[in-house]
Length: 92
Image 1 (cartoon, rainbow, N blue to C red):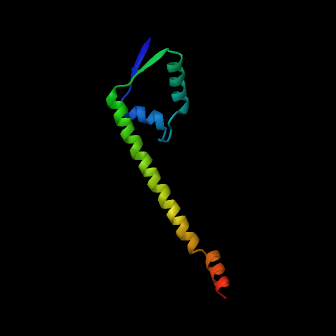
Image 2 (cartoon, helix red, strand yellow; image 1 turned 90 degrees about the vertical axis):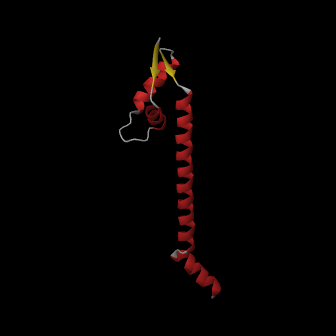
């Protein structure tokens, strides 16, 4: 049995695959080794806590960005030429 201990940054990178050039196949191979019990991943509590912190931060940032996109879409819809024409036609 072999054991693997990774740094928090590596764990996060493997979990999120957010950097250009990240190798999804390498992560899939790692998962196969873990599932077949050829390898054990040592995951200290501190890494779990740091991962949760980063994940929550990224989730909050994503919610914020999606909210901004939604707000901008609504604003753009309200001010679009089509909306203004419809408004003018209904007022006539």
